[in-house]
Image (cartoon, rainbow, N blue to C red):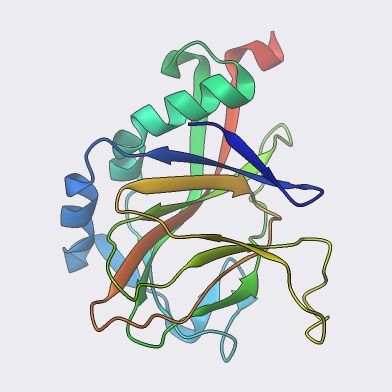
Length: 201
């Protein structure tokens, strides 16, 4: 696992969850999810700009537990933290995305969640399943404006596998291509803040 630079000012990190089963079980229980109506996420109204089912997580503890090894590796490479105990992870918001056939996600980025000390904020996507005809995740050259639809977008495409996790700065533009499979595609997205105990000593 390592950082992969893309475009002049963009990068992402990729890891893998050791055991995806608890997350799959959590997402299969409707009591754990709250459907988001009106396609509004993080105060942005995406209605008419994408086709997707979205559900808020009721409890983030299952995420933190499942991501323990991912956060440890990410923190080690990003902040040179020596162990999970050196880091304070706060998930600000998380949601489940469900893609049926022909569903897609338009080019967008995430609103950076507020942090107590104005730390760098991150977005992440967990890929719960995979299959033939599944959507591709694409990073978009952040030097191009969302309003410049007449320009050819430069993209870096990822064809993720089940249990893969990608982490990137909240401001990074990304999109999801139309889903071509009859099997629904599921991902978990979230925004988080990470700091180490050394930052305030």
